[in-house]
Length: 361
Image (cartoon, rainbow, N blue to C red; front, side):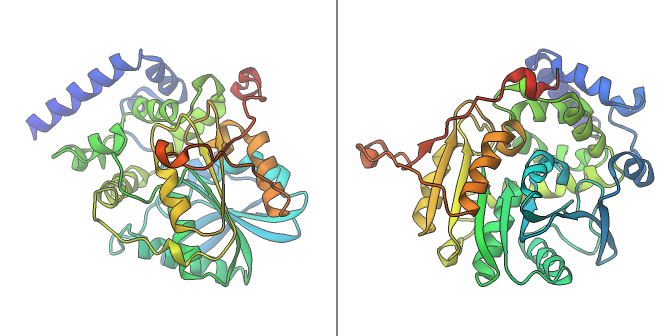
């Protein structure tokens, strides 16, 4: 145990120095107290709910959980699913635009946001996530809907679309995880012997803020309120244990030969959106999706990282709406693509949203 603590402290010191301490300062500002900043204290579910719910917040009962969700707008329904260590708030900017013409539904997945962890008898695995999503859409009487997911949410969305093709009218995948790959450092570190068990008890908030900086292509675009939200939701009682469990799942599924994906069964027209500077799931994963899904279009956003809908919301939601209206036309690059082993993609005209606007400065 003492050896594991020493390893954790050495790893923490190394990463703090490597980050230039900017993530440490962001975490300190977002932490309610010194003991929270050290990663030992949690924030009660009640206190988190007081801060991060509003008049649009609703609750759905699922196997002992109170699932936080929002359902707003009128028109054809679209369900938005967030990624690892995130929450429904990551879609705020998209929702404002989509709600003008669509019924927009988004939730905090089990283990994240305000929803909190699964009961101990349940496991964080694909089958449980899909069962949850099917239960949720059934309860809301969604017979046909568009589905969009980022990262882990993209993984869930693709599997759902393959298992329930008659329900999904259109599919939008933003930097989805799925196929074997070299995992990000945070997932590798979290799965080191001894560290995994420790991470279920102690998660220094600077590690969360460093991760947020990693998933943005340009960290100057990070709004202070977004950073505070990521850090504080990680302190919600039970969430750090969930994070550890899901990171373990992602690590296992990323290993070669871990799973055969049924994505050839997807019949919904699909839009693949990717940040060119994604450090978590690189653009080299794109050809897998283009091979397995027959009706697919791809957009890559220069200078953008793992969360395009949050980092450059104006351009990405504009493209998403064009796709939903069947008005998106992409001219693919075809010159010597096979020799280059690169996906046939169109680089979206992004970076029109200034870093000042996106940073909240």
